[in-house]
Amino acid sequence: MGRGGAEHDAVDAALGSVPGRFNGRVAVVTGAGSGIGRAVARRLASEGASVAVLDVVGTSAAETAGLVTADGGTAFAQPCDVTGEDSVTTAIAAAADRLGPPTVVCNVAGVGGFYRTVDMPLDRWQQILAVNLTGPFLVCRACLPHLLERGGSIVNVASNTALMGQPYSAAYCASKAGLLMFSKALAAELMTRRIRVNVVAPGGVDTPLIGAFTLPEGADMKVLDRMMTPMGFSTPAEIAASVAFIASDESSYTTGAVLSVDGGLTI
Image (cartoon, rainbow, N blue to C red; front, side, top):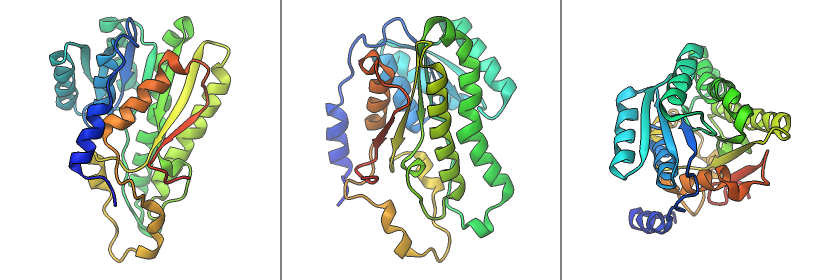
């Protein structure tokens, strides 16, 4: 059986932040208006980072920034469509101007959904790849001039679907597997430049994105067993704790790695 709400609450309560771990750092977090992105922004801020909260929904970004400041942290909210080159360039420039040059970059923004491949609309395929793969490229590219001067850490949030096939998820799997290899290629390119690039690969997470994954009518339940784990869904806070660890200096000798946080699904 999976974990229930009370057990999730108990786990989250035990995930204490590490005070001062990101003191003096400026972090950029995409998709920070809700779910994992919001949890990452709050976690990094609780550990001393000044956080640029980026989300395509500006009001959601502002809500997250408000939560950060209410907790005593520093945040700057900026609307950003990660699929748009101009939007990303503007957002990163605004963040650097407001908070200082970023040295921690967390690409969390993502979209997905279940589709029979034979019925997959081309525009939906393109959107999933644009958000999940092109978006991290554009954000990394915009942040790299700052990172190349100062060093830093990039964490790209992929998925267990980057490591295993999942039915009715061809576009999502392709985008997340592409993100994994983009991250490894970037890690190889930058390993002598004091820039680390790593991947956190969650399994099922209890976030609003889950609502987009509605099975197509008549889905074959026999092929869905590979998507289940007895540990159930994780919470955003559990993923944020892993992102903070691998982004921090505690992981100073780690680059090009994939940290699976999926309840053992990819064992």
